[in-house]
Image 1: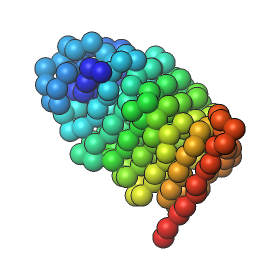
Image 2: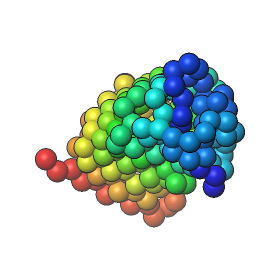
Image 3: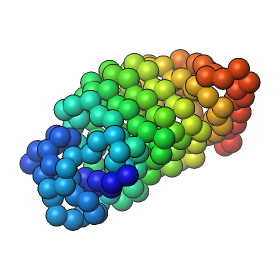
Image 4: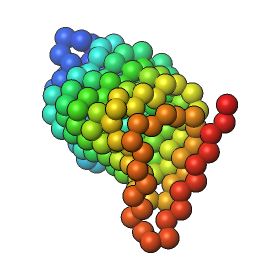
Length: 173
């Protein structure tokens, strides 16, 4: 996949503005905005917030511990591919549209407020540090998963996609 780095600076907070994206961290703006084959990164190379203005479909999203801004779902559908969603910093504000992560979901820092609709996670779930807020939405796991970490889910569903699926749940203080 191609790599796309958020370099937005608050002059325009839109996803589909090429001036907000680079192919290297902190690099020259003007790379095409991310599509389904792209891995997306948010780090200190971007100095502005992001407000989704279109539905998105990407290979992965990684939010670095040095990203201190906010990403707002803004009612847009999010489809994240097999490389998954990793959040180590910053703030993600889910809204009222579905989010599907077709890979692992890892929360090791920052603040993640889920959607008020449905968050579907196909891969493993790990929450070691950071904050997960359920936003009164549904969280659905759909394949063999390890669900690890102390998390309060509002409406948890286990929807196995294969007959012999196993779900392992664990939490530690």
